[in-house]
Structures are given as structure tokens and as C-alpha cells.
Image (tube, rainbow, N blue to C red; front, side, top):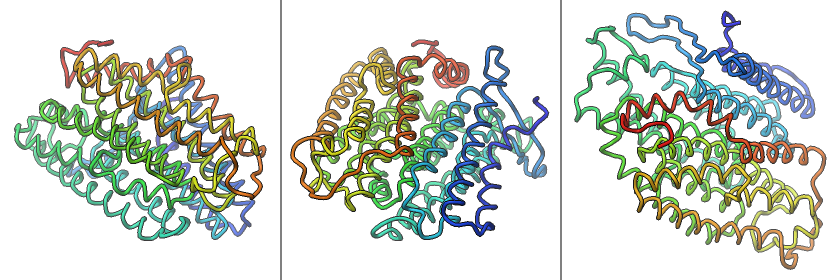
Length: 497
């Protein structure tokens, strides 16, 4: 079974489907069905790989390695271990959700719309699977292209300005990281392995301390923009507000996670000394982002914009956990990122439904939706409770692990994290109150969930419940890679600490 190019199939199956879509001359319904089948095929492929290589007798990692530009040491090198498998399956799941959630934003040019979504899935899978830094940097830059056009063509309001803002922020950070990758390759060229961009080789490369700190800063800036970390978060609220529903799902569920994943997979093991040096700064920025996002979210008048700011807070907490030096908190950050992808996916889908039904997402016309659409209200409240880390749901597992880990290493950071998580309840309760309860402020009818919307939200709810009640499989998959990374960066950090 290992002879098959499983990892290349994961990356290029959506891209091939994306290239076929514009060639078809079918109507919107035909394009939707084709795109949904392609996304289901990707999910089935990811599930099959999980069963084959991470089942009762795990056989990880799965590696594909071919010479690409030998003179420069650049290889087409892909690797799938437990950590990347988690995000590969998550990407495929969010891809299916994007297809199911899209029924109104695709009216202009449906073939192009779904092709851009599939192309975005392809580039994100490449980021999670690349083990050659040059190849990783190419996928990192490539992911900007489909999302830029998805917002710029199919977004709302001042969509082109927002798309350009997103592109400029991301491209600037990506360029700095690309220069740092080139610098690493130059430093490694005289090493025992010769020219190389392989992550495993560069992890043991001799990099001067000062140079390593500058290179780490370049990597982290690029990742911080994607996460996004305060103060380089300014692109996110506008992008979410104007993006189509599928665009918001890709942004919150996937692109933000590429930043957190890359910080764990690349920045920490490549520059352990710099990671120690900059950990207090990154921790401070993460905790500040948690409080800042809560305060600004409380002042928002648009449902989607409020949810966007909540993403900044959750990912800030994840960053503080990643650089804490606690193995327990590091595992909690992975669970929190997966949970956030699921809960924000549900909330952004529901916010999109509000906009489709009422023509606006502003709180001034909301209220009383539970009485008008009880199934919608129940789904909305469930996602809010999951985001608030209600015990038994996915958010609780990640946040509990982070808090316990932070208290073991930095007690005051743990205290601030608990306080920040308590503050998030204020804007989440406001979101529930002003949307679902009280008198209805709009005379317009509000249809309840249809079969398609119910299927989408039920699938996300099942995943949220499974992760909240049975986090063991996800933690077991991530354990080996996280132990290795923690051993490189914090040698004293043992599993569970």
C-alpha cells in the first residue's frame, strides 16, 4: 500500500477537480454536485489513509521523497505523521462543509467559485504535508491566490479593498519567511549533507545564535499574520465580514490553523534557542490578544465581525500554550485549534444563514430568532456553548489542558489565561442574547433550518461532541510528533508536563 502516492493524491485531487470545473459548461446545480463529490472524495481519501496507516497497527510516518532540483538540494518531500494527519482530515472535513454551506454566494460564476475553494484545499493540504522547507514556502505563498480571488470576486461590500489588504499582509509575511528559508539553505550548504532544505537536516544545522533569532523572527512574523496574533491581526475582521460563507470557513477553519501548525512544526524545532528567547514576548502578545479580542468583540454590531474577533482571542491563547514550555499545554493547543475550526465553522455558517434570510447580520434587526426558528436557535446556542468551553464539548478539553499546563510552568500566565477565558463569556452571552432571545426586531420571516443546513450542522456537532467526550484518539495521534518537538525545544519537558 505504501507504493501508492497517497500524499500527492491528497494534495492534487482537489486541484485536478478545480481545473476540471471551469471546463464544464454545467449550470450552478451541476457545479455544486461536482464540487461536493470532489470534496467528499477528498474526505474519503483522508479517512482511508487514517484507517490504513493510523489504525490498530499504526504505520506512521508515510513519506514521499523525490529529487526536484538536486543542485540546490530542493526535493519534493512530503511526510504524514500523527500531527499532520489530524489537520489533513480536518481540512477535508472543512472542505465538505464549504460545499454544503454554499448556495447563494456562487450565483455569479459557480464553476470559478467552487474551483477556488478546491484550489484552496489543495494548497492547505500541501502546507500540512510538506517536509521540505522550500516546498512548504511555495505552498504557503500559493494559498493566498485562491482566497484572494474568493474574497475579491465573490465577497460582499468593499470586497476588493479587503482582498488586497489580506493579500498585502500575508504576502509581506510570506516574503520574509521565504527569504529566511533561502538563508537557512545557504547556511546549510556547507554542512555534512550538502545543499538541503529538508526539515530534519536543517533542525540539526549549526546556525549562529544572532542569525537564528533574526530568522526565527521572520518565520514567526509570517505565522503570526496568519494566526493572527495582535498587533498584525488587522486584516482578519474585514476579511471575515466581506468574505462569502465558504471563505470564512476556509479562513477560520484552515488558514488560521496553518499558522499555528507551522509555528509548532517548523519555527520551534528549527530555532530552539530563539524560541526560548522570544517565548515571553509571544506569550504576552497571546494573552493581550485574548483580552483585546474580548473587549473589541463586545463592541461589534455585526454577528460575523464579532465571531471574527473571537478567533483572535482563541488563537492568542493557543500561541501562549505553544511557547509555554509545557508539553501538556502544547497538546491542548492542538486540540484547541481543531475545536476552534469546528465551532467557528458552525458559527460562521449560521451567521451566513442570517445574512441570507434577513439581508443583514447587524444586531439591530436580530432578536427572537429562537421563537421563529427553534432548530436554528438550538444549533446556534450549541456552537456558542462549545466556543465557551462547556464541559463535554471540544473547547473544554483544549482549554483545560492549556490551563493546567500553564499553571505548571508559569502560574501567573495561567491566572491571566483563566481570567481571559472568563471574559470571553461576556461577548458570547451577548451574542446569544441579542440574536436568539428577546423581542424580534425585524418583521421579516425567518425560515428554520432546511435538510442541507441541518446535515451540515449535525456533522459539525457530532465532531464537537466526539472530540469533547473522546479526545484520546486525537491526543494519541499527536503525542509522538509533539514529544519529539518538545524534546528538541525543551529537553526537560517530559510527556504530560
